[in-house]
Amino acid sequence: MGVTTARSTLDRLVERGLRGESGDRDDVAAVLASRDADLLDVVAAAGRLRRRFFDNRVKLNYLVNLKSGLCPEDCAYCSQRLGSSADVLKYTWLKPDEAARAATAGVAGGAKRVCLVASGRGPTDRDVERVGDTIAAIRRDNPQVEVCACLGLLSEGQADRLSALGADAYNHNLNTSSGQYADICSTHDFADRVDTVGKARGAGLSPCSGLIAGMGETDADLLDVLYALRDIASDSVPVNFLIPFDGTPLQGTWALTPQRCLRILAAARFVHPDVEVRLAAGREIHLRGLQPLALHVVNSIFLGDYLTSEGAEGRADLEMIADGGFVVEGAGEPTLPRERADLVRPRKRGAGTATAPNA
Image (cartoon, one colour):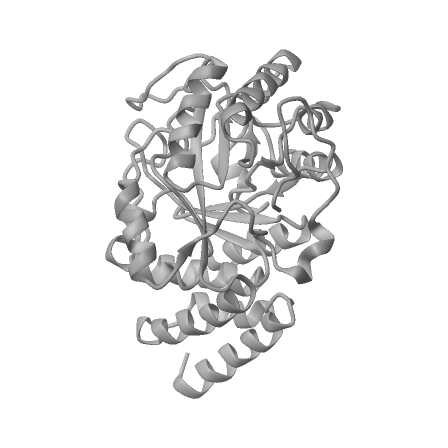
C-alpha cells in the first residue's frame, strides 16, 4: 500500500469496524499484502477497534488436555494425527479430579475460561458423560469459570447434552479455507466442521472457531476462512500459527514472519471487529519479540502450554499484559460488547454449575 492508499484503506476499515461491520474484502486483502513499513499504521487502526469494543481487557484462557495422541484423523498439521511419528505424550482420559486440579492452576493464574480438549474424530456418548463429570469437578472449586469443550466432530444430540452438563462453549476450528481443506485432511471435510459448529450454536453453546496460518495458504485462503468464520457467527476466533512438528507432513514449514503474523491478526480484527480474537498456538515462536504489539489487536490469549507444545511462562505473560497497559479480564466481566448482546444466549445449566456464564 502506498501512503495515501494505506490511509484511505485503513480509514474505511476502521469506519466500518466501529459500526460492528466486517471490512470490505478488497480492503482486508490490501492489509494482508501491505508493506512492513506500514505495519504500525495497520496495528494502530486495528487497535482502534480493539479498544472500542474491548477497552484494555485481556481474556486469559487455559487448556487442559484430557486425552492425548492416537487420533484416527490425518490432519497434516497435527502431532497427534494418524501416522504421526512426533514425540508427544500419549494417554487416555484424565480422571475428573486430575483435570480439575489442572484447571484450578490455570484459574489461579488468572484464566477466565478453561478449554477441555480430547484427541480423536469425535466423542462417544460415554465420552460426553465423562466430560460432564469433569465439568462438575472443575466447578466444585471454581464455580465462576467458563468451560469450553473441544472434542472433535459432534453427533446428533451431543451438543445438547454438553450444554445440559454445564459446558458454556464448544471449540471446533475451521482451520483453513474450503478450497485448501482437502490438502490438509482427507478423513473429514470442511463441511463436517461447519456442521459441528452449527450443532454447538443450535444447542446454546457459544461457538469458538478459528484458523491455523502458515500451512501454505494464499491470501485468498486466509480471506475465505476469515469470512467463513463470520458467516458461521463464531463468538471467539482463535488465530493459531503453525507449529511444524517433526514427524508430520508439514514438518519444516516455516512460512511466517513476525510481521506477517501481525498482519494476519489485524485482518482477523477487521473482519471480526466486535468478536473475541484470540492469539493462540505458535505465538511464541512466530511473533517472538512482537508479541506485545499483538495485544493491541487481539483481546484474548492462552495462558501456559498448548496441546503438545510448551507455551510461555505464565508470569511472563502477565508481565507483558501489565507492561502494555492492559488488564486481565475478570470473571464477572462480559467479554463480548453490549452491541453483541444478541449472541449471549440463555443457557440451561447442568449439575455442578452454579452461575450463568460470561459470553
